[in-house]
Length: 119
Image (cartoon, rainbow, N blue to C red; front, side, top):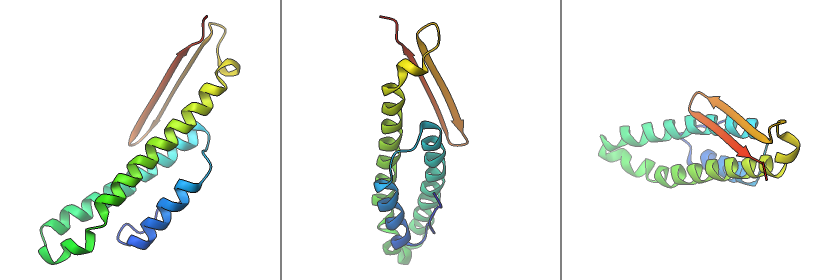
């Protein structure tokens, strides 16, 4: 997904809605999307912190804490859904030792999953 202009409430809200409605990608793509989204969150947080020093601008960024919460919730939901999809396929992804091990890393996110399928 393409990141919106972090200074535009409308653009950020559209991004949240569209990303929230999008189908859950495979785990690797979900990690990549979450990494990009963390960059948007960093931009929003930076703008909020800068506005705290300028009283006149505080009202302009009053919407950002809510957007940050929603983006964090969406990141968690996307990773949870992508993880569930991997777990659903764990029997076919398992090694000969009946284990499933995944490790993914992006600049702002590390993800690891280990599943022991031995019964």
